[in-house]
Length: 115
Length: 113
Image (cartoon, rainbow over all chains, first blue to last red; front, side, top):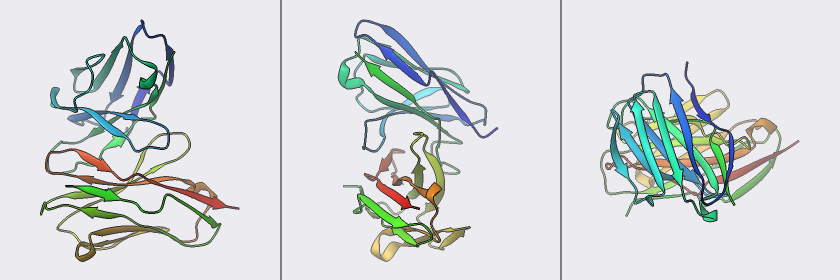
């Protein structure tokens, strides 16, 4: 199984809602990532988890809250988002974070619209 | 500063033509990794290749080939005999020593039937 899955595929939420994005991989990878991608732009790194510990937080606003319950799962909890947070949210995983086989494999993304 | 430049914003070629996508990077690191990813209209980024800074061997995979030249800090990607299914945005990316991947702005490739 060489796949990263993400749910939901699409999400529409109001600014007062609380929702969560889910990412799952069963490749035994120990590093997992969240990216945000606006239209016609490259992905921007948000968070990195390595061995279920938060390793990198790219100064993301606290209305985005990541969680890594186990080595296969990565969540992104959303609360009080703004319309400018509307984007494609991509999850990725890699075998390891440092050295070794570190190419990242991406999920299909969740297209988020904040009204 | 570390940077990845993909100077070609958009390219259109007719099917069966060869096309080269340019990527130039800047770094003072001696150890680094370079990648190419494809993003079709569906949105998922598809990993194509990884190169580390110690391996300057060029690589060919079917119709795809990559030319890595440290002397010019370039990692160019050529598609031979292009097909409509090759239409996508292609990103060149650089992994720095802080474990952060830096993407170029991408090249949007249109293969016309």
